[in-house]
View 1 (cartoon, rainbow, N blue to C red):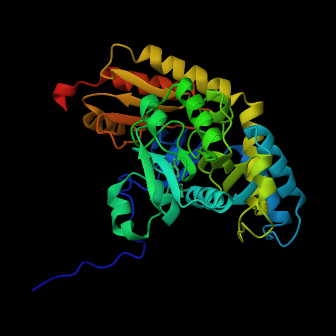
View 2: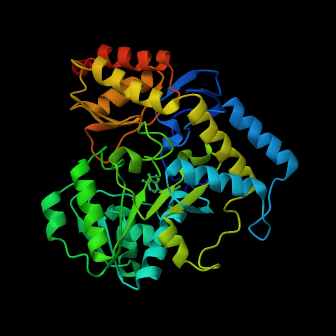
Length: 382
Ligand SMILES: Cc1ncc(COP(=O)(O)O)c(C=O)c1O
């Protein structure tokens, strides 16, 4: 006799932590038993200003009470303010608001195909850009891309950060090249400034649009507003989501004036994109990042972790600012040990790299708790 399991009302996606969360405050979350957890995972790199930052909460609740929603069919002063603020912060000229990272990338890639008339894209080994069809085309994760192999746009895939491979690649038919400036899921992989400059030069020479997927690296996380400022290279298009509105769903496609000038009204669109609630959250997020000095804090926190983890089971701290990878031959057991010490960290595609992407205002106490727990870890006992 075959028994069938009941279908859960909530379709399973990720394997969740073994406890439900009911509250968050700053760099901690609390479970339904009142236990506190230091959050170095940040709800998957989303909670840039920490959980329920009072200024963000106030901005959201004030906005909800005055105008919860109106689409782009009406001009909204708060949407104009959000556009002015995020373009200035990112060093770009114009923005299209949408609702998620995948949607921002989907639109960036559509713009590249539309404006160049070319049929090919380029991306990098280990890159991860989302689950919609164009985003899947440029994502290097066979378990989610293979079922759709026939529907994907042809993509030239190059090794990340490799100057020699870049020099010999043929971009003449490539509409757009997309990259995470620091590859997160791949295990916090970085590239040199010289490589970023060579990529910019190659795009200029071939008429290929350069797209930075800054869904994790943006919003102050590297200690600069976006990775573009960190690496000193200005892309044609930048995508943002995750930390953009501190957890209120929002995506943004930022672009240069040259790109914006070629788009016609109606080329892009979204019902919910740029809704007033998300715009209020974005305005408060940028305000908190700037006024609370969170970019300098991210840089200082990373320096402290690098220094104080020396001599521990962590043999290398990868990444920049608060997008960090902890390399350890014992990463799997270390993650379990940290969870037992009420510390949430992320895994990655590299089984030897754990990821840290905490709120940018992660406290001294949280950093100390992590450092102490790592030094106390004894691999042979796990
Ligand atoms: C670098 C990067 N790009 C795109 C995405 C897709 O974003 P979303 O889940 O909001 O669609 C993610 C999500 O993890 C990401 O990390």
